[in-house]
Image 1 (cartoon, rainbow, N blue to C red):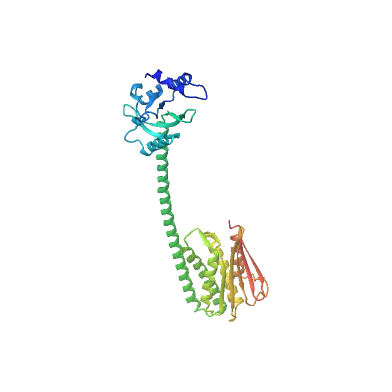
Image 2 (image 1 turned 135 degrees about the horizontal axis):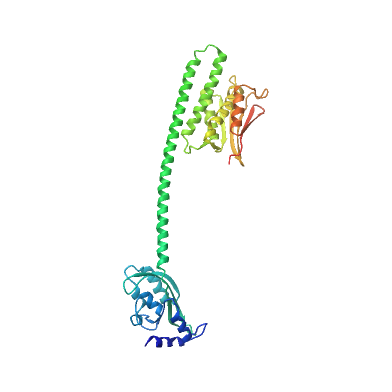
Length: 364
């Protein structure tokens, strides 16, 4: 049967745009490679191929007709894609795959294959119609994009690892700096305490003691920083609890209880020293003045975030406020350092005791 006779078989099919030779002529003339197979014959052979298919594969008409389409497969053809085609034919369904095929000269091309059953009026499959499209350039472009993506991902991983290593080195360096600063401040405090014991003037000794307390507070700031995992942030609420514990412990006052209820309040590490000194003045005042003369009592620290702000409230049940806070050095430090960090400090009376509220604004 020659090519023209093959196409008389289309007279047995019905199409939405006509039947018989007009359709056959359109299929023969199209630039898209096409074949028709006959599943009623053994091994479902090709019974028609157009010139576009012959040009794509390099095979002549006589080398194609009567053969199963698998002759286009080769060593590197994906078996999984072949199985998809086999299952679609067995189930009488359409299938679309991209499969590596081989030309007559052995060269390869990526074939975008679409295969669909053609049924008669009774719903019986008479033929399988298959169109091909050479998408080699498209697949090669996808492979290049994939390779470039892999290269970019590898480069990103490499750069991320380098940045992580640099960050770890920076963190280690900053922790070492904070540790050494803390040790130096502790040493300065020890030297001042030795000197304080030699001072006979109680007023001068008292002022020197206050200065040593501030140095201790700064040492506690740096101790908190070098123990933190994030060198850029400082948990001021955790610090307040740690500082209160240190102050009560160093005072030797076993009759002062510490009650805390705080959640993390993170500030920039650069604000740590200023806020640390503010809290030191507030806590020192509560312990040394509110609970002076051996008066037992409780210091309560509450820390919470609300909206964009955060607050640390320090309550004592001591003698309470006799008057507004004085304008001494401690109050001057509180006012200046609070303003420097954008915070506000408010004092109020309790019954009994005093409440001091430190508000940190715009923490977001």
